[in-house]
Image (cartoon, rainbow, N blue to C red; front, side):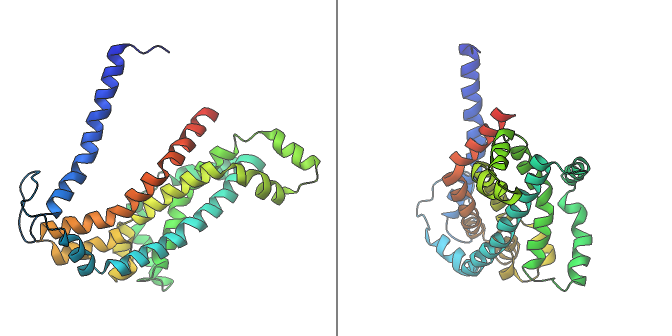
Length: 274
């Protein structure tokens, strides 16, 4: 398809505008974080005396070492289990296609319409009855369940496009269902699995609502959930609050920037197959 010069220029201008709109809030946070503590900076101005120590002070004041460990533990509980369950379910629904699989898949699709806010109250009472309130399991277990509709949908979309010839050839050679899954389909699913892992990591790391409602101890929340306690302590110190926000955002930005090529490649692969 031939693209006219006007369309090409318009597309580039639109991309630049979107980039500016996306980057500007981070620039504002960064510049504000460099101002003297206790001040109220106005506009996007570089301070005369940048206070880089604000980041150290925010890290120490919020106890971000413990928050970082808590977030890592929660991510380590959510992401691997979600990937395992979603891969098994996606393989069954997308490749094996058992009886009733279509109805099960529709149930997962309906789960995509379920907002976190709509189940937070039932989740609270359920976690209380299970004795899991104020523990990391109160975040890990609900997140696995809430992420499962999308994760299964994602993996099924991958497995349903896998060539049948591979499975038929493997079965002729005597491969069972488990060998077919583990030795053939899982290695070919690395792009889909890696992109799903990135999404689950970002969503879990930035989870705020469940962490605040189900866990009282800030040191057992995600870093984003602990921001509420940090804001309550330093809400009037805008530079320090901005420094803390940037420290919390840094891991997610780093992960996305490092793995963005794999993520985009998986999306393009899925669009080409579809």
